[in-house]
Image (cartoon, rainbow, N blue to C red; front, side):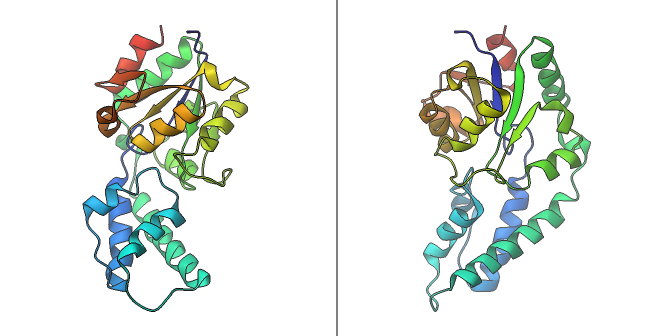
Length: 213
């Protein structure tokens, strides 16, 4: 196995913004009179904004919503979410993550971000981590969310590497599925470990250094 590049999911791997997503979606759901809890929120991980809205609206029993109204709801959620993201600082990235990313690059591997979020660059700027990545594939350049492999396939293309030479690092089963569908090796961390599908299991972020010799 001659890996040449690593493509990282963002939320749950590099940073943790689940609480902000939850708060923003909860505000929208409460205004619509829709039941929403953390269990439902967990279904939204790695899922695009509009697909997330579809999941929340499964419990909506009011008048049918127009596409314009749906887009307004998603846009309002994103505005609330971005306001919450403004509270993020470089301290929201651990030393372990920063040092591991730097060491991976020092060992000669290319590094990309593969996130469905359209806020990925904004988040990286807030936590002062933009320069840690050679390329960024995010919600602004894809049309399909995970488990479709598009975001990772494009990440590999941006890096100029073949999918089979890339390792995807994910914390969600949908992300692991996307990596597999894209023909890449996968490393699971956090909640993704329990799906049992990944090529590698990471107890901590720095365990990547045992794989990327």
